[in-house]
Image (tube, rainbow, N blue to C red; front, side, top):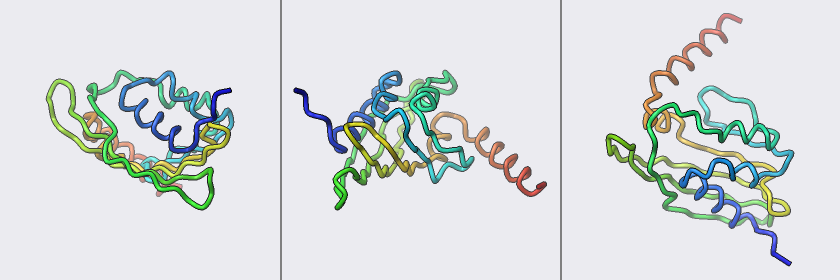
Length: 153
């Protein structure tokens, strides 16, 4: 009987899957009902609550340059709760076409139950991610639009 992967193994499958662009496999790391938030998202996107929402989240958009990346500087901290880990890491790589190097830091707080992610708080550098993808102007415009909408209410 195969052993159910623990939080460490699931996290490594997640960050390496992202780095290797295995987008269609990533939603299967999550429970059917989950709760994934990105607290540092400048646009304050809603929580992802289902595997289908994650499938859409991980769907390649074809917008922006391809990124050659790998997960690096990984530090996984176990907690007193055996389902929860705090994982520090960064994606290091280059932008295809320009060769521009980048380092994109992140911290994930994952709860894994029965080998699946049931909740995650993903603290990520969204501004650097947008810049590396050539979408910084788009992000700034969206933040300004959201700010204008909030003040109009």
